[in-house]
Image (cartoon, rainbow, N blue to C red; front, side, top):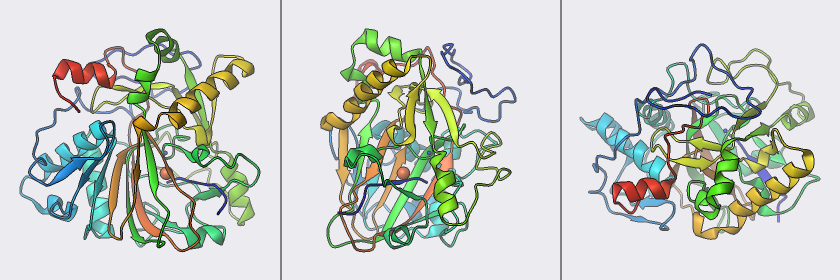
Length: 375
Ligand SMILES: [Fe+2]
């Protein structure tokens, strides 16, 4: 089996909400370059219900067949309505899957930009640029080529874990969460597959909150965690590269060579108005404002929450032409590194808002109950 690898591409308030003062807060955005622009959560208009689909698990994931071609949504006269609904659907279901897609790289980029923009992307945010991504797809630095062959040669945006846990679940992460302003959505299209293996798994971090007692959840609402990817300096050095100190990576706040950020442990998704656990174990996860010993215990608890609750997860078996689009604010994901053959695809990620916790947000289950719907 191949060594475990980690793939990467990812306090303010939405205008109508109030923020909670967080312990350990260091992120600041006085100029407002990273504020989500939605006035409040978005309603799903139902425009995608006409396409055949099913909910992959009750908790997370919806799958569409080839009747829905993402390329056609872009060309539709009501493209904005359809793609806004798509963004809402992705944010509510965590991840959506689309089989047998003809979407080109250029269309992937267009669609990713539209999804993010219609979901309130700050006007200063753009597509994600990975700090060590040198090998890119045809679209340049704003898409990333995912390639097992490139990984074996020591390139790309994957990190080989040579002296850490071999637990497959240790690679769970949210894309570029080490950035001050991390990713809102990511899209992956797989074009070349091994005969077996290479599935991707996602964890629904909304539903994880229902596994906690209310008092524990309240405690976590006051905490932040560090997301640290400074290991990329060594990774880059191994290949004769350096991390740029001046390149802006998708938002003016994402600049410099310190690849770390402190984000609220419980984060509000502006599209749904629901809170989720935002804990990217793959990026270290040092919990702020507590002793190291307390951090170790809390980290273990949070990690077990995500790893053990398979009722809050989904595993997707790719086919050539499959596309997945997910919300990085409310899910974790990991590839399964159980194959030796080539697995290749293109990924497009966008940068969203500075993570925040709104005091008017609810859990997903509270939100669904108030709406009277199942998902
Ligand atoms: Fe990733």
